[in-house]
Length: 537
Ligand SMILES: *Cc1c(COP(=O)(O)O)cnc(C)c1O
Image 1 (cartoon, helix red, strand yellow):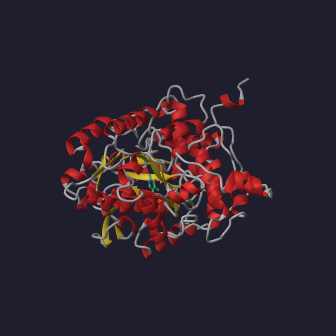
Image 2: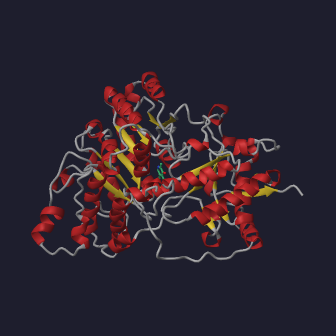
Image 3: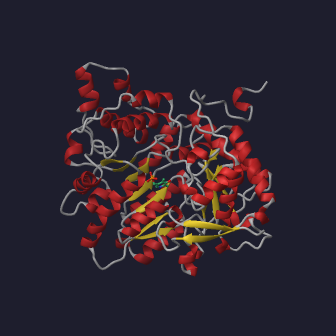
């Protein structure tokens, strides 16, 4: 008889103990609301949706451990207890590998031994990693809590931009990434720096859906030749940072291999350039390395994460993703590392960052988050590295992709870590839909109208195809994303979505072209503009 792990389906990793009723909205009601909300996915009331695949950001179900931790939230203005717990959880997650401290347990168990609390939590001293402790965090700050990932990006880029000007006001600076997330790119550009995408060259290669359990081509990797070419072409002094996003959200949520991370590290070291992660889905990326990269099958997620982060000099992160928290973000850099050395010109860069953090988000010990959120986040960091959870989540996304592919829906394969992406160019093959008809948007409108399922176009509408040069247009993929919130949906939601999407696919000639009815010129327009579907009668 097969063992529990040989059955080909994951052993269940959790059970929901709170249930939210889905309202039984009719097609006519959704049609009415769509009209009233200008057919914008971002403006439709979530309470009237059956299955919401708009984003995996902040939309996960927290665990009982997180809810218990939340009750220990401390709303003190200065140095709430969760601050210490969170900083130690950061060290546990990214630095300590298989030997975490779990000092969160001191708080959750109601420890009252004051000497123990002082020694192990409140005045413990540490330096040389991503989180200085005790006095070192005061004299050389290197850990910054903020409400979201984009706040960390704003903090970083708005602080370094004037320093770059001061260093050399005549050069253009470029920050390469394996795939800039939209807010990362926007924050870089807003500070007068150029953002360069170096997607893996195999990204759009075909991949058979029945091999998803057998191998993975790590299509999220950075194009290494592109990186060296860029450094040589622009000059080392024009590249202030190298960024790698794990997993690569902009490139269909594809993972990055440890080998690629090591190679980027080698190049960064050769040219003495700081190497950072956009670390939003670090544990999901580690889980792909464990399954598919040689030598990692028997390693724990924590030890893989520890190795990944040993190659970087710092990271920005949105904890709304793998933190399993509803809110939170951060920026952390290695004490006395390359970044610290290069950007501490006439003052310590950490001091400058801390001043900006206080100006924009609040005192460094809460950074714009509530004490309750901080505790829930610290607890979440211990939840997201649990292997049964990660395994079940990965298989859920993969099964969603496999079922769609089996029904002939053209999706990007293999499945990424947090979402399934439909290739809309292939989807509309054989119809008269052209790229600037925004067929992907028409698809999202019909999927919501007929079946109460929300998705999002990440293609010519979102990336503003009509405003770009022909050269820039080549870099725009025509995708619709179905993102999977964590611990929210079951097989029944997925089966419903697969049936609905398949039905739309079989009726694709009825999907409307879409016109922008208001605000075509607005920035970040996919959040703002009004739309009008054009139905053939
Ligand atoms: C979500 C995300 C961000 C931005 O984080 P927010 O918390 O939404 O501000 C940055 N990078 C990547 C890869 C993301 O997925």
